[in-house]
Image (cartoon, helix red, strand yellow):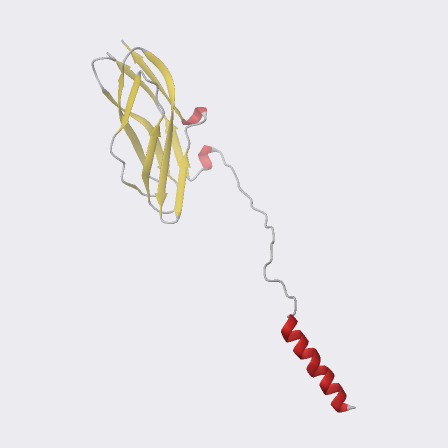
Length: 153
């Protein structure tokens, strides 16, 4: 009788080894993600757009501050990209980057502005900042991310 039980157990072990245990090879699970949108006063990067007036538009280039950004991250960041969408009559060339911005400090994004004719427009300005383990892009798609430019004769 003991021999019969041993043979049956051995047979079951061989079948299990050949067929497998049918354990799952992959698991698909869903996890919730929570993203909080805060007011600009509570954001990691402060962003303040400026109004710029350029006079004597066709003969001079004005240098002006477009945006001031404030680093509210706990570590230093650098401005890695600034893009400005302009019209054909308005030429804006962003000057050199601002370098490293330490926590709590602000930096000005400056540009040279030239107008081919009288223009009263607002242009979106996008700023990307990067630091150790952090990146933030402030997109110029909303009214608070636009710089008002008035080119007057």
